[in-house]
Image (cartoon, rainbow, N blue to C red; front, side, top):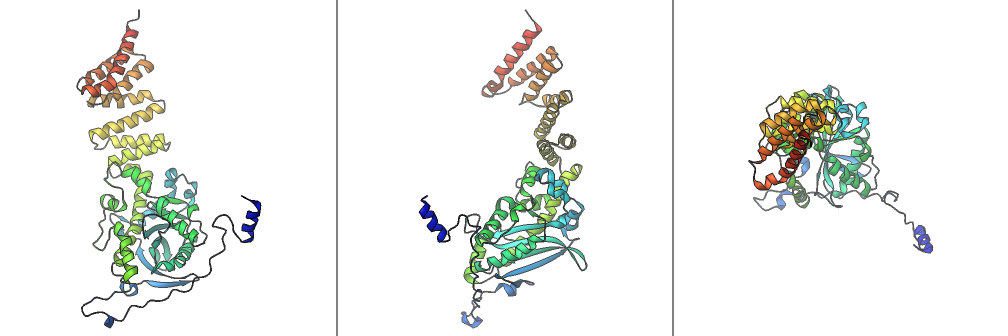
Amino acid sequence: MDENFQARLRRLGVTKGARNLKPAPPKPPPVERPLPPTDFYEEGFDPPQPIDTLIPGIHRQETAEGACYILDKVYPLAYRHGQDTLRDLLDLSPADTAVFTNDPRLASLDFRDFLFLDTETTGLAGAGTLAFMVGAAFFETGPSGDVFVVRQYFLRDHGDEPAMLLLLDELLAAKAGLITFNGRSFDVPLLDNRYLMNRMPTDLRQKPHIDLLPPSRRLWRQRLESCALGSLEQSLLGLRRTQDDVPGWLIPTLYTNYLRSGDARELRRVFYHNQIDMVSMVTLTGRVVRQFAQASAADHPIDLYSLGRWQAALGQPDAAEQTLRWALAGDLSLDLYHRTLYELGGLLKKNGRRAEAVPCWQQIAATTYDDVSAHVELAMHYEWQEVDVATAVRWTEQALALCQSWSPARAQLVQPELEHRLARLQAKLSPP
């Protein structure tokens, strides 16, 4: 770029990047738009109802950046949400999540140090998407003891966003970490972008963060049809929402309708939806942590299989072996029984315990009709580890016999390799 041109840009105050820009000038206070008097409407027409009169406890909070609505709902720790109480989580430690979050800072924290965060937005993506409601829940010690507070920030219109972000930042400053459901991919980047667009600093991305969606998929995808939060509530947490709820995909439309009409009646369902999301994250966090801290108490042997695979991938061979053995002791389908045996056998083999893996492969070979992988493992083990070529020949012959019941196309995928192996082994038995 021409040096003279660069100098002209500097004189005009042009800088590189957005974070060093001067703060935006203060916005004028929003103009109140009172609803027309009831006699304005035709007879029989139901006039719009403002949010202040519909939701008990909601109030406007003034800030230096304007005002936004806030609603607090307080739950006692004994509150039962599905099969669990809110107090159950406080008996556990965030340290048990450090193994899969890979964040050692969690080891020194308590769940009272976290903010549960969830947003309701005007859309799914894009620069123009904003959170018109932010749910921020936390444990708090009140005059009568510990409670759980669900605080919801709500925008009566887009102009209230700076006030909401300022209030949220004050609450974030009092908490050390975040707990979300898909927040790492959606809620946190969205809010971070809104802080940037409003030229307001935030350390949102730097806080220790437990995102519940990835571990939920790891732990329960094998057993449950869906790992969406609403599905986990029904199939895992023992919770069914009331008719006050609203589908998540409909929420942006309801907010758009509110902005156009000023009628807040349908928004009551959005407040309910967000509140339940927040409370469900508490009990779901407890389920995730207990799977690691108390694996033997898992709800189902399929969950133990999933946990064992994950522990093996995380480099915890001892824990993975014990978890997989617990899974094998449960009531598994034949297919999952084989997969668990394969997982355990592979784990033992990887850790130099091939002889201990042999019973796993033998059980698979004795109960399968459509797979010869275990036969091949046994043939290799007896050929190279036990140096028992005759036994290796026998397992290879059994694998070839099993192929005879398959379709020609499928058998052709493994038969040539087995025949080659058998010829080589037989040559070892009958040297020239």
